[in-house]
Length: 66
Image (cartoon, rainbow, N blue to C red; front, side):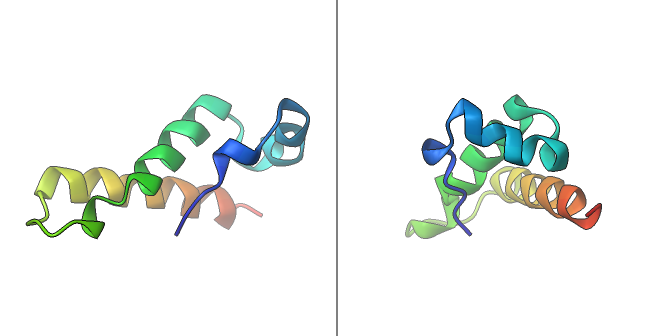
């Protein structure tokens, strides 16, 4: 999953605001997902996995309200 936050302008945000409410939380969770800790040839750290899952859940919860 990749969230393309760099393409959103302030006027675009108005389209997503009613779903995600808080732009700062949206950007932080999107950045965490986009970081892709699992794309590197290293062991997965439990803390990284927990943060990743928390961010995915944040998006899932927001979208489930639709």
